[in-house]
Length: 328
Ligand SMILES: [Zn+2]
Image (tube, rainbow, N blue to C red; front, side):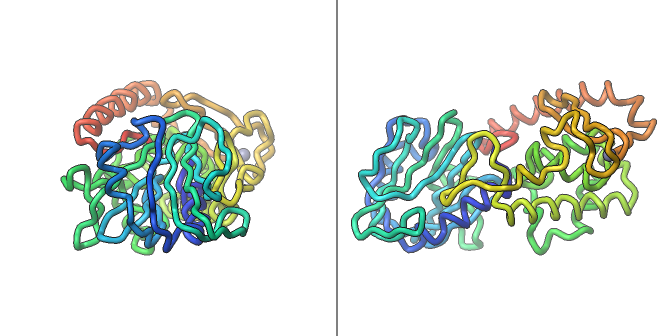
């Protein structure tokens, strides 16, 4: 599933292709892909609008339109975006098409005729929506109520996301380190791959209690998260599963230290990388480099049950808010 570096790469590829373009029309073949407002209103609201800027928040693409509107695209597991000349033959996994005026297309080409911005999504978990932007820049939720990203934590690469801020947030957490990193309300954009990579770099066990770190360990984790994210963006993300950006895939998958390297030698100590299941997802680590303190070892079973219950509760409250689902 695309995480912060993959969605950032998609945004950076998309920006030169669509910034300045005007949307002429919208087509879809599967209504649920349009999350807000209802499809007919969505089509009315995008028609004639100009795409001013392409950015990212958490694991969403955020396209600023004129008139303080925002086109938000949640790519989820298999969402892909392509910009091609209108009329290009595509497969049945394209569920939304926006017709744009002439301009650049993928692969450094250009067309004077209309273009298509295609949203292709094999697993069909991705969603798009039009939202409003408040005077202070905040993206509003459905029907201009609340905030679209109100349940999301800070961006780990933002300038104001300092070690001090990270520390303050971490010390309030009672869960396991891996579970905490994956919690989008703690920090936004970290998923399974980069949580495992960050913890290996910081030499911290995924099951360690988040509030048990000493200042040096907190600093290591802060630097590891930001370092891994920056490196992954430089390498255009990890091409695993269906991920590809508008101008092609990434190379980070060839530079991962633990993710999906179960049994392979640890690049630090040579011992085999281990895998355990945490919240029904694979967690990869080196049990030699990432030691679990005795106090956490004895509480492991209890905590695993507790964290499962917590995420079930969170799932309910998130859907009641009408905000993004957990892990999104
Ligand atoms: Zn090791």
